[in-house]
Image (cartoon, rainbow, N blue to C red; front, side, top):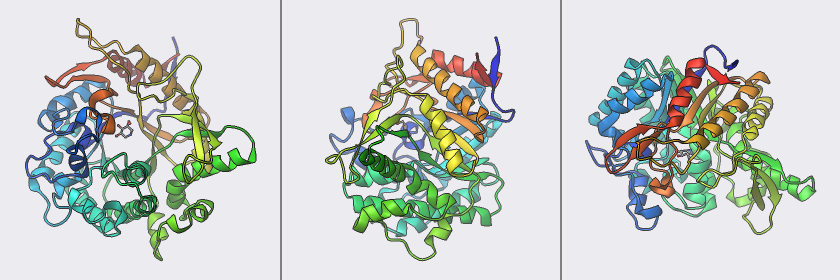
Length: 449
Ligand code: IFM
């Protein structure tokens, strides 16, 4: 049997984030995060679940790193809980918080893995939220102070850094739709948050370059693959707005130093306030662009849907159905997306920072999880990534989301994304069938044909 080989130095990994796995929400001097605050309110999350304990990773970190080592991957993507470092969002850093990530990075290195550290995977210190959070320009400088602390502490050992994970989600689900913490529905604030997230990214990259640290730095955006539903002018225009709002709004400033003019004009008074010099700061050269990809859709004009007046119809590969999140499975969307982004932005180095699926996994009486649909999902999406590389995409890495089942934001623990099953009552970890399948892919540095 032949192997579809990935490039020689390809990075294979798994990803997690602090709030979703760590627990220990108020231990060792950690401050309250927006997600602590949000989940402690009734009816925000399915079953009123919280991340108070989550996978108890804070206390089980060496065991979890061992699971990653045994998987054979060469990198681990995780995030730092900002309020563990700066409980009040500013001032003196919390030594115990820093010590935890120090130990984690050392453990990851000892296991022969490259650390890939995300500074902001959504858990903002609540103290900063109370002053306006990401819609307050002051948060930009608070983030840069925090980033500087982390660079100084771990810059000698971390290989890959990301400033933010999914700024689209932070801006639009947190401040626009109000579905995520802090639960605010105000699109003017959401667009202002976009600008502050991008500005804080640029400033943090400047600080990173000044420190001449050894690693690479980039940002991670979430991108679905979109196609216009028809070639009618209204659908085509709706499609352009969808693309601008998801993609160009975040990627154009990085590579072209501007926001998409057509979208800014459409937004009118909702457009963010930008100060002179901001766009130059955002356009700092980055080492890679991280992409999180989960779904694809056809875009239609819909007058009553939202102020951008577009609706989306899931694209689904015949026979592949949906994940348990209800997201259509369309692997070719990943191939098309990677090629499209590469062409638009002149073939930058790309990393798939997240891809994976929630499935209705069951632990059998024999203590096994036979998650064949996840294997099929990963097989197809990795094949799409392989085809994109063959087409010239400069893809450096693939991180599967996620190492283990964890707290899936507003869905709480109802969704299982892991290669490892977590029994939350006992915290027992059980590698699923897909864990062994992925191990083989990594070992072969490719897919069996
Ligand atoms: O669990 C999330 C992750 O935190 C960010 N990207 C999407 C994943 C699945 O919803």
